[in-house]
Amino acid sequence: IPPRNLRHLPRVAILPLLWSYLRGETEDCRIKRLVLPFSRDAGEQVVLVWVLGRWMVHILDFKLAQELCDNVVLFPKETPDDASLLWRFVGSASLLMSNGEQWRKQSVLIDEAFNARIPIAAFTSLAHNLSAIVGKKRSSVTWDKYSQRFALDAVGSTILGHNFNAMETDNLFVQDYNGVMAEIANPMYVIFPWMECVFPRKKLIRRIDTLVDKFMQLLTDKKVNPGDDMMTFMLKDPAMSHRELRDNMITLFIAGHDTAAGAISTLFYFLARRPDIQRRAREEVLNVLGSDLDLDPSIEQLSGVSLPYLTACIREALRINTPISYIVPRQASRPVQLGQYAIPAHTSLIVNIYAIHHDGRQWASPDSFIPERFLERGWQKSGWLPFALGPRQCPARNFAMYEQRALAAVFLREYQWALPEQSVHRDSLKNTVSPFALTLPHNLELTFTRIEKVQKMPLGVPKDGEESDHRSFHEPRELLTVNDRV
Ligand code: HEM
Image (tube, rainbow, N blue to C red; front, side, top):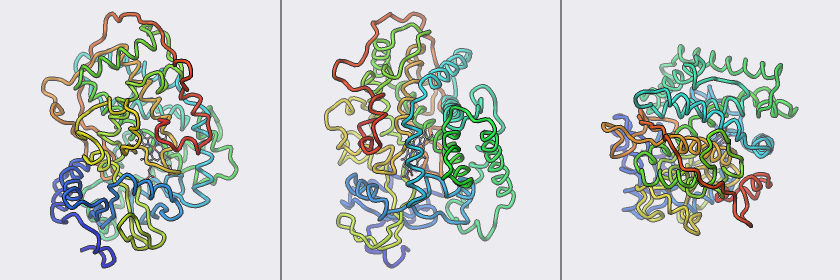
């Protein structure tokens, strides 16, 4: 039963929700099966959903989502529960979880670091490494694993300044991380978080603390051996405390690789299912980059302006299988009116990105993969927000878009890929269960066939008068808050 002050809000029935959690249904399926039909039939834009042991207000409307995301003072991030093991690991002093002055200071610093440059050469070189690994495989490739390894090496080499070498080796650090996250996600503890206080998981707590120590060691090494990476840049700022540096290191590790891995898996899945779309994306890439695989692409060639169709495919993949299904909970700092809904002070609210991306009132055929919708004028008004909105939207959105374009461009020039005959994903993409609102394709096998001879096509550059993403990347932050930049 929801608290008294929230009972006026429409609520999704609790028993089907409980049953859905107990039988391990993934978030995307739960939203499509229970949350969206309820809101559509009742004509509601805001609903109460029981999630992770409590009732939370879900925003399902794009305009209301904008209102919430734009006002960081009225809707600060909720302070995480002390008993939560996820937050014991991630910490609360990072850019992701802090508020007020502490957040503002870090936001300026991290934006500056992301805006300084896009590491195209690193992305391309890692993509070539992955392509060589895939080329040696005789059978299908478990693509979601390699997406994760690629994304981790990208974050490791360019942001954390540490080579995890995840694509080449079964890194122990990474195994520890995956093990800890899997244990934190024990369904009983996720559904009933109070169990953490009644039956504390001492062994897991020790494992988490040991992993945190490993991150601390990376930080200490970085102080001694600075590099050309974002952590070194942050270390130079005297205003950053040790705690903030530690929490940001772990946050960037997690936020930077699981999200991008989900996006890359989804993109490659839809290109595999739709050979016509894959062919068109390949034609565009060959036209712009040519077929000489020894010539690495420049930032201009990999911009959204140069590769509009590939960019539309990436945007559509980010819409249809949104890597983060909803934002970190916010808390209303005072009573507030959101549209027609009265929200009491201290209410927990989240923007349900996945639901907004699948709302038939906003998107035609929301469950179909149609990149062309992002080539039409005015698509920005449809409600696309995979990177969230407003001042706290993802600071790495350009980084993530270039990372995907670089990898896809290398693979489109070298391979054709498809789903194996017996793929469990033949009819629809199956994600893994994640209590952290991540949408990650699970056990996605793909078969890659090397393209023997590609036709040479002329090199293309942005047409006269067109602006390249490279230039826009150096514009100040305020201008980048518009989603169409990515
Ligand atoms: C396709 C890839 C990605 C997606 C879809 C994505 C999505 C998001 C979303 C939805 C948020 C808002 C969260 C909230 O307000 O609760 C966010 C914030 C954030 N993301 Fe990303 N992200 C991606 C890649 C990355 C990468 C590569 C990094 C870093 C290496 C990163 C670092 C962050 C950080 C630090 C924040 C917190 C910003 C703040 O609160 O001011 N993200 N991201």
